[in-house]
Length: 419
Image (cartoon, rainbow, N blue to C red):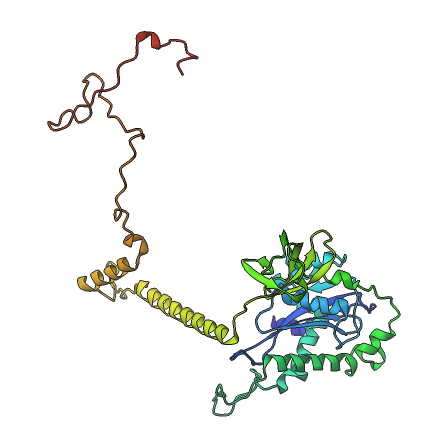
């Protein structure tokens, strides 16, 4: 990896706007407040290689998935945000081999507009140098000046700032600062490599290449997955995944057949379409009876405590399972360094047996009922040549007579009829 700093790389020839977009994720080395926790968010964005215009941006408080990629692409394709002039369909999208970019949802969404996705070989960041330079520029120009920057030099005594000493930005404030910087990059910054020292927005406007615009109606279906079922609007809304979704536009439409589409990993709202005319968008429905912020915080705290307890139990169990042996200086069998007593072993085995649900099951707790008289009962067959049952050698065993022997004419010697 370090040897790449001493290699020589060529430069791709200058092309036109929307000829190629490059996309990437960047982990932000800045801690921000997300519902009482300090997390490092992630940025997913796309940049036009010819004009260096940032086309689409999406920010998530956690490592992004396909929903972040689709949100950034939708922002760039439709031009619905005011931080840049770029819009339209690119001729190519160049990405690395991240599973979020190469998933079937992203390739299917871009394939609907005939936009190919070009995955680069692994461990070749120099092949998408435009987006890599943007990742470095945002940290050098913006992130280092924000509170909560994790790569800041510590004091001479080596003491790190306490959790409450540094006032962190909220997630909403960080997204606002980042989008403001993106607007400054597109409209006021003069990056190296653009002829004439123009800004990315000026380079975009000066390019005479026609832009292939996206029909706004087609963007309604972009990044949405189809539920695949026809449902009906009821008095409680629309049922999806055992939960009800409601909206004001549903009033007076009870009994109407509809189709649902939704964003991946997002169940807060769904898009409802007419089942008879799938291209007709009826509106957005939102989850009814959502939990309050206090309930979500309490649930998150309970889940965190349970995860910590399970981790502690797993760590203790792994420590008990590991066996250490004494060092040998002469040929001898391995000798454990820790020896348990009989009482300790019996106590631990009893505790494990009490915690095992399978061993605690009592199959004979409820005896089986007597079978009905109409059921066939098993009959003990006599042993050949004795005329007695298997228990005939026992004095107290009752002798059960077998069924009468069939008549000789009942047997056949024909090979086909005596199978």
